[in-house]
Image (cartoon, rainbow, N blue to C red):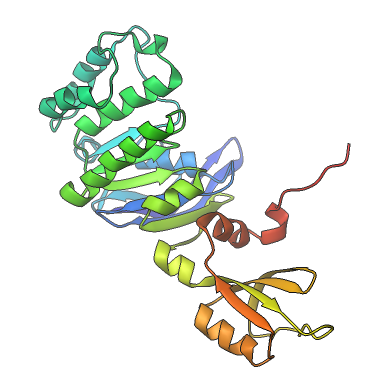
Length: 299
């Protein structure tokens, strides 16, 4: 298990993290989402032991990760800007990774040559961005980490390779109990793979829940009322957003669909339908709804 407990981090007077708390359960996929500047990459650098928190704790299996080689050996990471030596080939970096990770699996490295069709003697810096990212996955997954931490992991990969990479990672989760924490702006993709989600903003975590629980506790409702009879919704309902086009009203309401629907049915709508929200919609409304809407600028 990964735990971040009330962590703060300040750079030149700017609070990048302000009492952040995260709990990543073992053996699943945890999606960390938030707007640019929310603190996601700063959290990741704490989880990988690069940054020391100003206050608070960052624990891996109950022990601090900073300057702890035993715990760092359990973690492999692919940052948004993957590091490699300027003159290194894939095989050179394989030897480098093998020296740091006792669990490095040479047999898997050889098998993955069939998946990642990259010349292992090619200099990495001369490869395309997508091929460099493939090399990162090739090497990192051969480390057989207990914890795999990813920052915008599939950016630059073509659709077929994205699917292939996710398939390999999810196989490790199900067969070996690997724990994956992934930070990404591709919420549609995360929705297909995540068990838990944490939403960050301004250096803290607003909420973290299982994805199923998150989707069950916020609902989109569409209703049609009799002409001139659109009701004022009950005050006890936590309405996050209301809009309408003609007679069709759309409501985003926090709560369970069955409870909210039964309350609105008392007002005798001509039509009432509850719709599931995507992770992207949940993200927008949890962060404040209209203030994150796309703005029209007239030039």
